[in-house]
Image (tube, rainbow, N blue to C red; front, top):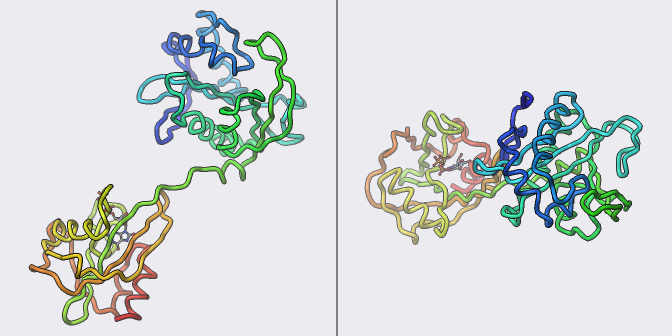
Length: 326
Ligand SMILES: Nc1nc2c([nH]c(=O)n2[C@@H]2O[C@H](COP(=O)(O)OP(=O)(O)OP(=O)(O)O)[C@@H](O)[C@H]2O)c(=O)[nH]1
């Protein structure tokens, strides 16, 4: 029986305990010289029944808290495996830490899924989970000296070179030269892929009385209830000006031309899941009557009163600049 383990999810992958049904696809993927030749503990050819035995052994190791070997699943299909094996106390593994709790990282991805960056996605996620959840102090790994691709994976997830060694390779029938890598929490965290930058165009519509239009984010959306400048995400291939013209029609039923959109300033703000880059335009002329087309509450606000309207954190510096300018 597979052990109880809450699968780890990444942008594209699920890392979960291996199941008996994985044996056939696992065998097909790993019984490939191009894959097997890079792995120290995999024989080649790889006997079919070994797949079942290996899967059962991963359950025991996980239940005993000795190793976490997981299936890498992408779009419902097994594409490879990733695993961490705890160092035995005083085991003195090459590249292992002198003190503290360490584990050896290993992984492979089947040939059909190469070239998509799945190995660093899986290995990075499992390593960061282990550092947090198992309280490990270091992760270490090795890669054949001529396996530049695997070395790049280890560097990408934050591990640093830590020397060379000879390591027995079942698939090669003898010891092979390997490069050793290791890293702790700080190195792994520093390597977390940067957040996507989201481009949002926004505008301060200013009426003849010098008041600014704010719209309240409706319930159900992130940051619901906060007040913001009208606007929205710039679609791929769209300019910020075109995006604003489109959004203002959709949200407020007004017609704006590019010539009436004056660039004013911008916000660059790190939200939890993305980094917001938001140019803010000023606009004093538009066609039609402003009305909320999406049920949003609107308010025309005097510059000195803007601070009374709670806004998203990215907007706070913009409000101060607007107040000074108007
Ligand atoms: N329009 C606008 N968006 C802002 C302001 N400040 C700010 O942080 N944002 C953020 O920029 C993003 C704007 O995206 P959006 O309006 O197109 O999309 P949304 O999150 O409302 O939902 P959606 O993805 O379902 O369209 C949101 O994450 C919003 O929180 C602002 O003053 N105006």
